[in-house]
Amino acid sequence: MALFNSKREKRYWLFFLITWIAIYGGLFLGRPMQKALWDQDLQFVLFLSGFVLTIVAVIVYALQVKPKKLEVFVWIGLLSVFIMLTFRLGAPERSHLLEYCLLMVFLHGALKERIGIEKKAVVLVIYSTLIVCLIGTVDEGIQAVIPNRVFDPQDIIFNCLAALMTGGGILLLGWTRNYVNRRKSQG
Image (cartoon, rainbow, N blue to C red):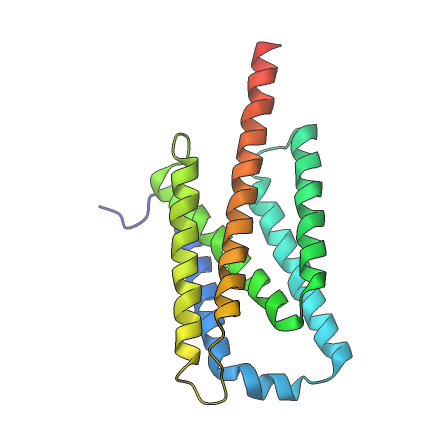
């Protein structure tokens, strides 16, 4: 029996694992790297690059099916809320939102390929969200024992908020797509 149901599932698990390793790897590189990149202009460029790439990854994930007009409208609304929330936060909180949003997208994609989503969309998002929140909690727990790192319960909240926002967006877009398809089949 094959370990993966499809090449797509395998890729999602690989992206999920790479993202997870990068997040945890950042625990040990964080302070020295931050000091080396202390320049505000450079930090802005790096954050903006990460932000744009995260948005592109989420959009590519969601646009696996050609969107209808209402779906595009919902996407624009979700994107604007995410952008406004991101710019209200400090740099560390922003990075948590981006990292854990991507982690959620890749995990959800892998589980969707593994389990299927047709009748289990909410359950799949709940499982994905809980797993990402657990990973974010362990991430912070590890920081309690690493020198020059600080355990911060607020970071756990930001990690879980990223998972919840991403999961909510996935569900909202799925429901929008179903609504559009039902209206199209009735009309």
